[in-house]
Image: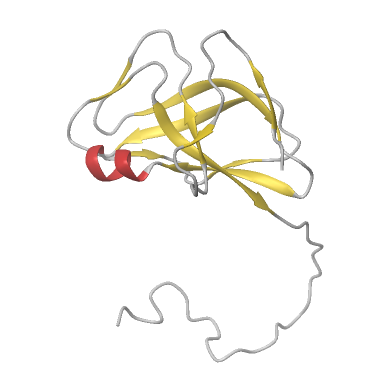
Amino acid sequence: MIIEYKKLNANAQEPTYGTEYSAGVDLRVSIDTPIVLNPGETEIVPTGIAICIPEGYFGMICSRSGLSAKFGIVVLNSPGIIDADYRGEIKIIMMNHSKKAFTIEPGMRLAQLIIVPCSRTSWKMVSDLPETRRADGGIGSTGIK
């Protein structure tokens, strides 16, 4: 699959795979000066690119495991969803869950983007749903062991 992209400024960079079998491409930030993300703060960070996702697919912006594990830096609305008809700049909502300030540097690989198939559904209201053994057992109902 080929995903078309457009650079929106001179320092924007093409999304790239970190390894041969990476599921997601790394998204780099497109900023002129560093951004300090203090503990508990959020920031919307530009990538400087717009993309064209084919119909029947969507993009998921996910945290990078190293930034999450080592620094507590995560994509806040993880995964961030990019619809196939969106043509604006890809921006990443980042949050610092750590107790230390974190500096986002120009060109840093900040998140990853995975292109995923999806289907559209139709909805039908009914008076009863088919029964299952689980029934309405929700959050925590299956235990942890």
